[in-house]
Image (cartoon, rainbow, N blue to C red; front, side, top):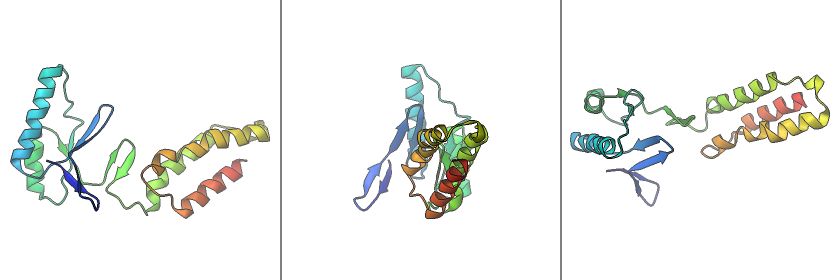
Length: 161
């Protein structure tokens, strides 16, 4: 069970963050049943319930019929590979400008709440350095920032300053 990644072909079977999990497996009935069994044991042993309404099967390179079969087995929904996980878009080209749209929109939204004419220059500079400069950091953990996006963010910050 798992997926090979990179030149060293490291096998990744799952990724977990707080209460979110990504499970990787081959697109076959036996592995899907194994995942269902693991989920059931988890529920029995820990007394916790998995929210299947929020669970998604994301098939890569499999037929729609297979995807529907796995969704029925796991009692969840299906989705294409371009999905959001922890706020980041996965399965999309990192060189596309629209990946950064949520970051640029957040910066604009933060600025719309602040009245620059009522703030001193030092206050505006502090807000830019402490708040706005940190908004892209999470995206930078996965994607390289495009030069055009960096210039757009700089121009937004300069206009506020």
